[in-house]
Image (spheres, rainbow, N blue to C red):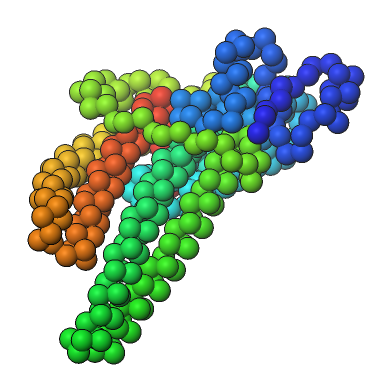
Length: 385
């Protein structure tokens, strides 16, 4: 897939429109906004984690619509402005992963928080261009956070599928073993039926995992500017850097979070714009509540990092043990003192430990990213967040 830049001159856009392949995305920024090298990286058919923010900025439909709407906001009615907020909230919700793993749940909760904030703002008429800009920036940053969560989820689903496929191999060998035993009078028909059912369940689990993986891939493609059926090369997730934890200081970072938080900044601007005493009182109460919730959100994000670090350490210990067991199984296989079924069982246990380690690494990385987002403006600041 190739992404095409927007051409400012209407006549040029009309001439080139017919040449644009169906389903490709136009960049939101003019050509001079980025270097040739930056454009080349964004326009290749490779999805990289460190490019997600750029891809969202240039090719996400919601962000592009917000960019176009920004200059028109001053002339819109309050009802139209309210609908824009609701549309932005809907866009954020549609980009949420909806998965039940811990990392996705946390990311979706933060996204739901931003969506609720937007819906609350839909009913607030104290607006100006600065508020519009902050709101759109908040939406864009939340979409970037969602893209990061979805990309991590994609790679975890790849691991899950590989594990299920290995389990299927083990169950197939188990079925063959039971069938052989039954022929020799060492297993019953019920044993064989149970082994067959387990194999069929494994096949069904693989189909479900493949479907889940494809759904996540399509969601990523669409929100980053590719067609849903495109096949970009999806690169890996950076490894968790434990030095980032050492650099975290929740007490100091709370102050940064208060300074950067979009919801709090928007409410403070509304307070400055308000002329109604009752409105001012209401906004001040909201701001006071925002401050408390932001601090709690940073504390919670830090706690999640520490918990993920503990899980990471435990997974590392388990992998070391599984590696030694696998080495022993390899030696036994070489000298013929282990059955194929027992060897496959050890392989599966080793793959489980490897998968758990990789997932723990990604969970820790995502917890660190979530902490940084809390500090950099997206900490949950309102009730229900």
